[in-house]
Length: 473
Image 1 (cartoon, rainbow, N blue to C red):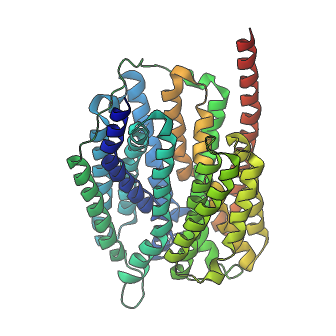
Image 2: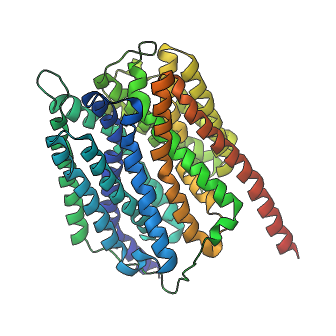
Image 3: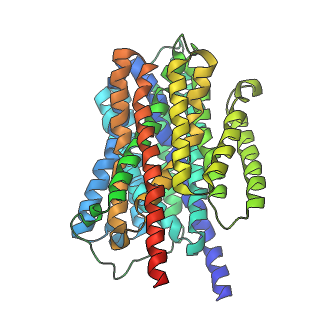
């Protein structure tokens, strides 16, 4: 048995590395939206509301794609179980690559609706990957190490979101921009063709790599909407909607926020480096969360491991962004605060979720009411406290669903729609009351998450008490 396990791990190394590369590209291209928004806004003379249609189309595709998948799975059975994970992943990559290729005609015709159409197709491709790749990684090895594998691939996804503002911003704002510095739709042609080429290269590698085929034989097709009888799932869907909406809205407005005269009055080419800090914070927090929430690590070792991980990732971010140590040193304060928040959370997902959401509410209010560096620091610090929210909300929402777990999971993925809706509302407020005051929208989002964490703390406590009472009989 031991020899078989060793062989299995050896055989899974190449597939896992290949899928991890896919996660990196997935994160990179998703974060490119934050570069496109200010660029297309100036190019087509858009209002903030109109520019947020970028996120509306991209994340709206997540909802529509997940809804279609949900309806098929509850009536015909799980589509991925029928065709296999490898074919599902390849289909998602091809669809995403096609979306990238569509940027070429959109840029050639200088058509904003065509850009939005390309983003919608791109979002549909990533929806398929969201459904297939995450689950597939969890199957590539022993069940007891599935969480470790998912955290690792998600960390590389966050690495992609961290370098995208710097590298992608350089490509669009500088390398492929007009010689006189003016904005042109043509600047997006080559970068997105490059992205399409890399995605197709990853697809070629995956097609040639021998990937194990997993089938979930004998699974019952649960029809109807029985999962919605669970209140914590319904609350979790709302919390996920607010989380994705809040995270995307803040990231989408960072460049515009830092351009404000009363904040920092920075240009896009400089602001993109600070945007990397926002997404880099999520990467740091994700590594720390993987350690802090891992119950197999002793308390004495956790602090040491977390300190080492934080230092290593901070140095990686510092080497990526075009900023001096003095400009980035304030981030060390947020890393220290993150340590304290994890310690207070005591490795409890629900409690930690509430604490992180409360900190983000305070940071957003500070960003709204202050000016200069303090306002900038406040908005950038939100990223590191977003880090564990997706995984914590997801696992809390589907906890204890039994046969409805798959159906509940689909509903939670649909809630990514928040990334399409919340930025639109913030865009409207930004046009009406100004960028700085528009952050009241994410404040409400994080308040919902805070309440959800508190609710789950109480709910899980009751569930544990009931379980203990039954076992006592």
